[in-house]
Image (cartoon, rainbow, N blue to C red; front, side, top):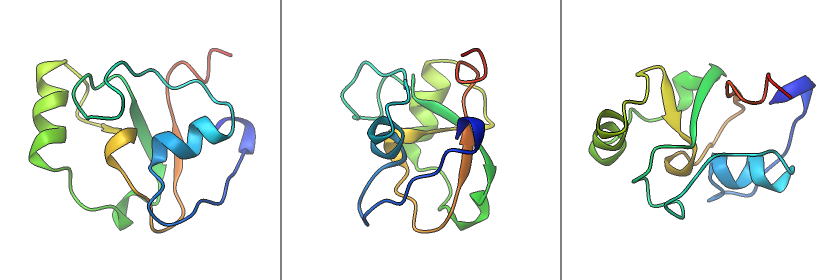
Length: 92
């Protein structure tokens, strides 16, 4: 998160919902369906605790030309600590 922000989330909360709960802007257009792939985030730390991306996430990223190093925040439900960023957070 930008500037050392952190948030604790309940089980079943997506990374997208966690970021939004802190008032952070997250690009999205599909209502968390994993279709638009605009919510791509770079996992800085803790990514090893995440499951590999599923077929829907992979296809959405490919179709929308999202870099391989980004994960779709609407398709990730963290169970452990993560550090993430997006290019537009660093522009704020």
